Image (cartoon, rainbow, N blue to C red; front, side, top):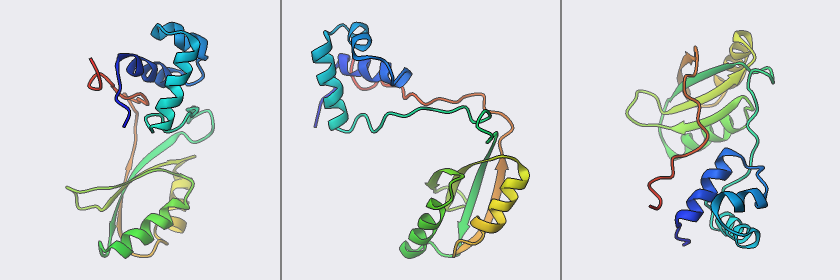
Length: 159
């Protein structure tokens, strides 16, 4: 297991802000030369700290302005039923996140993006309710998102 130090943490913080930063710029920002900086990035990737490099799109500009949180309750909470639900929901492209939850009447919480209310209604009727074992669905429409982070706070990793 790779143990993180201050420089690793700085590298991760910078990459969370801009995954397209060049190794030269990153090395300068963290106080290393390019070769050792590149090696550290590779080591962070190989050890799983960096899961992937992505581009975050503007949801409104790509025509999916509506975010919906959907709570799903299943008829039964058996391993087989959970697997059936998770396999079914994985095939729905509008589902961005899926969480198995506790502390609620629901079994799952989904984050869904849609074009509009009609699109969500079609998805609800044609896809979500069609998954075997779905007992009930509660829909929560997001009015606005005052906080939207993609970067984790890493201050607990090293001092």
